[in-house]
Length: 67
Image 1 (cartoon, rainbow, N blue to C red):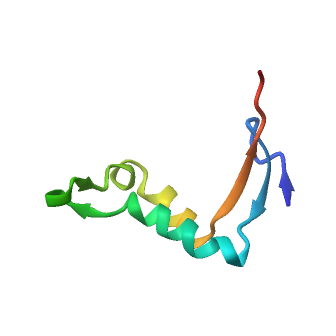
Image 2: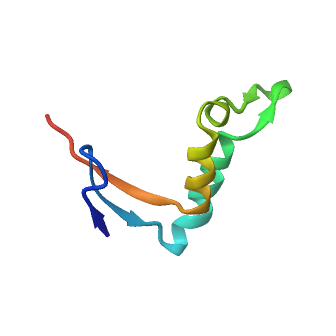
């Protein structure tokens, strides 16, 4: 667990083994290019390096929220 990643992130925790496949599968949906089905990889085109890193090393970010 690391703290102080940036001013908005309180801490982050590694993804556990039971979450790993589902998290990576969800991230990969943003990378799919299949115009016939409406999948245009918009997230991946915008910030591909973020998706590549998140798929390689997924973590849970805990954010500070002010209500």
